[in-house]
Image (cartoon, rainbow, N blue to C red; front, top):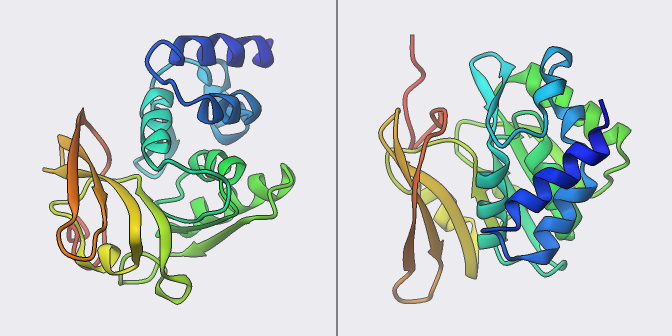
Length: 213
């Protein structure tokens, strides 16, 4: 399969609605096929989520592009990602920011993502095993935070780790259907924008969902 040609077709498709040229260029550079299981590689450039094991998915490229664009990255930021998954979103962020801190609660996925990112030469991504408290407090504050799992509410722990003027993009709703929110932190009253409906796996941890039995 010609992955480069398939990647170019996907980016052209995304450009119909995504106008951030830096995000589109990043997605044109990152090989999504490296972040999916071998038996899913032929579908790597379909605009759809794909399973990566352990009940987790690699998100739909359009949603990744939309969420990334809403972070409004210029290249100098320190970004936190909650939910590393395959590592693909972290790679996109690494193309656009100075430093990416990403956390994953499933050890196998964390190690797999770290290996792929290392092999691709990303030196500005730090992959951590998630702690009980959401995020990674020791590196806060962050200029931008992206959450790749659905939460029942906007976690106060993540807002506390966001710098004034920073942007948080997060799916909020039920376990099965969410709305994508962008929160811009202000000294007095945060700005909240609804970017539309979406569907993510559940965020697990303090101030999120309880682990399912």
